[in-house]
Image (cartoon, rainbow, N blue to C red; front, side, top):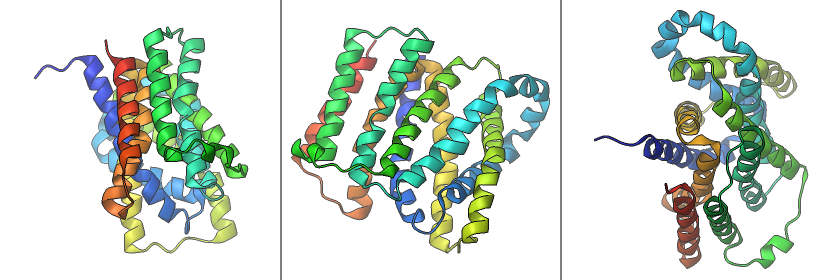
Length: 295
């Protein structure tokens, strides 16, 4: 079956978002027993070791292209690998889930604004309407249909960390779109992860020296495998492909479905309830995405 590049890009963005939705549940439990940068190091180390056996030959063959691309790869690695996830795990320690969900929805807005400034992407009326519809669906979901809950929010230091994380991931997405190194996508991902790990090591080392090494249980090991191979390796590979195919703005709009899939995951695995508000929110989010991405 011949699938158009636009549809492939949308499916890649959707796949990455679905996997990331499970990451929030896993990270919530891991974050209680592992320091943020240490958890991030275990996550990305697992992803690197999982990808290395399949890509090292291609990476060696493209070593000259890698060397020329390093000035562009280093800032992407610092933002997308070293800092973003560690900030997210740091924020989760002091901010309630409602605040984090609300702040996370700002990421597509930052992506669209940065794409307009740096990539000169057009901001059509249809895209704006889709953005507003998807944002409205997210707000409906996280407030459970009661707008007064927004007025009762209390913001903490974690909210500031999450806000910074949202901006950094938007900037990372713009950099991926602008990258012209010509590397094989899997080689690019391997180098990106490896470079990010190098900058993450001092941070994680400081945490280990201060708090000691965490006790890894079988359940924790399985969770680390999930965030390493799924939420890091598979999701970032699909997200980078989506950004390359459909651009960061449209991929960012699909990212709005993250709370929807998080709710479904929580319903299936944690038994959390779903009601009419969730269905109405799903309609707004999916309708907005379709409106904004339809060619």
